[in-house]
Amino acid sequence: MVVLTPTVFHTRSTPWAMGWVAILLGALAVQMLLMLVERLGPAADRPEPDDVPGA
Image (cartoon, rainbow, N blue to C red; front, side, top):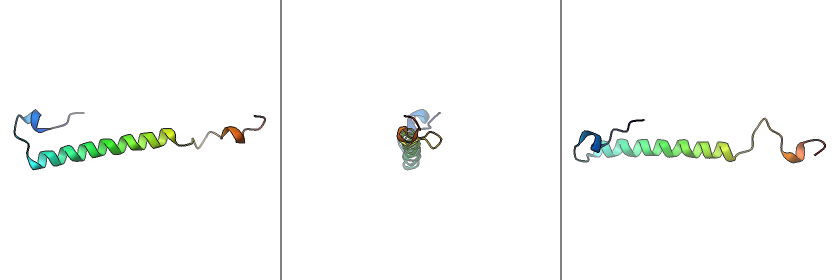
């Protein structure tokens, strides 16, 4: 993924560029949180160990 930051353009930091960087970093943080919740949450298709007969 290419992030177009002011260093890529070799320009000074402009407010719109900083805004886009903040939006991209926020989107990345949300994706990481969603992956963490999915990984830590119980699997819907897998029964809990206490629910398995004969365990």
